[in-house]
Length: 383
Image 1 (cartoon, rainbow, N blue to C red):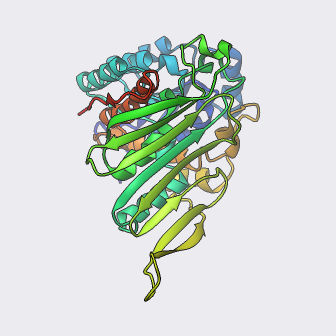
Image 2 (tube, rainbow, N blue to C red; image 1 turned 90 degrees about the horizontal axis):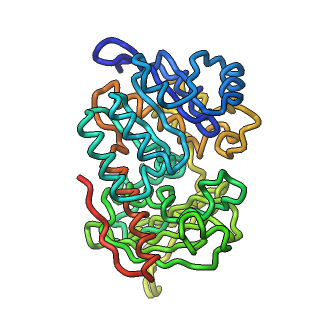
């Protein structure tokens, strides 16, 4: 495996946004294809505290400063949702590869603009969707590749989260605008996109939460038709005023086996088909609880510790994934590795601009449906 770009140089990466981005900087630093990591945050105190604690000497105060730095090859944006589209386009137009946390954008027009910017720049774009690199998803993906599910009959996903006391831009955000954690695993397993959606809003939102986005729903539930026309998927998303422990879940229902993941820290439930005995009505299923294993075999040795051990990070950082040490069920090092290797190997990353747009558009159109009483909305195709 080559550890250099075609020009013989290793990558120089800038991380923009440290409150969540701080979880990624040490992973980039450890990656064998990266020779330099710079950090950026508009909070000067946070920038300097983090830089001093973890030894990152090159520090930028604004994205403009990063984009003017000719030696920076790639930028990872971990910034507020309303800035994703504009900042992504600027990074690509500056001639730098771009990774961005979810969601890609919040309007169809923004998605189209990012896809166009990626094509015209000929630089890589990757949406850093954690849900398709978790221990749990990687196990389900392996089962599917081995044919264990048989024909998939139905898919279900959910993402329950309470955003009280989070930064102001979260206040009243439409649930389906931040739905890729629930949608992406389903579309990734199915290997397709959603073509149309009916979605209903549910519950009553406090007036103060409605003002910013005009969204009246704390909960939204959608039914998606997938492109093959044979399989549908159900997704529920909550953001406010609904009591439920945090959870990103997916369920895959197949003819031969089913996987359900319902609680954040519990094992997967795996149901396998058992043929009915003579005279027995209906087929039966065998039930097994399976703890999904870490997959250090998919990573360079230098990143294995980010799966098997606790990485020291900023103890003042309130984000749960940072406190876990290995980030969203082990997804962080896989995301970094895929982004970096896609650049080195001169190929598109798995979650490239078109795939990211198709995954994100599903949620945007779902919210549009909810705001119109569940009316069918056709989801545009990105290709």
